[in-house]
Image (cartoon, rainbow, N blue to C red; front, side):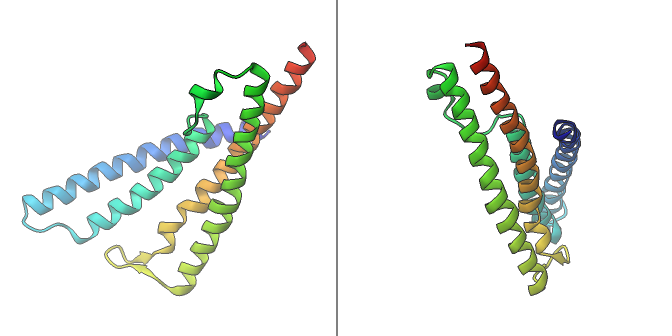
Length: 165
């Protein structure tokens, strides 16, 4: 069931990332156009670009964790025996999941709540600064879900590897 949910979330995430990237390209193009052709940059374009870049980076990190493309020391781990490699995968998915749960989801959620309660605004866009930080818990929740699925798959592979020996 988790695999099915994560598969659908991954597909939606792909589309969202494409849309965000397209919006970012259009926004930056508009900012350059207004600055150099019209003589003054649109005030909101730089702020929107920053907001889109944060969302793009954090949601992209979530997708990278789903596809196990996150930063790692593959060169070192690939030299280890197969069973040790599987234990390393368990450790990595556990670390990513815990980091995502406590730092991104919980900590990011606290930052969002603080920004909403403080009433901080993004001046050019006229929206709450909490929307800037909302990318943290959203990507954190996705990474937790993806890590749980990958952790379960790693344990299954360990179990199957132990039965074959």
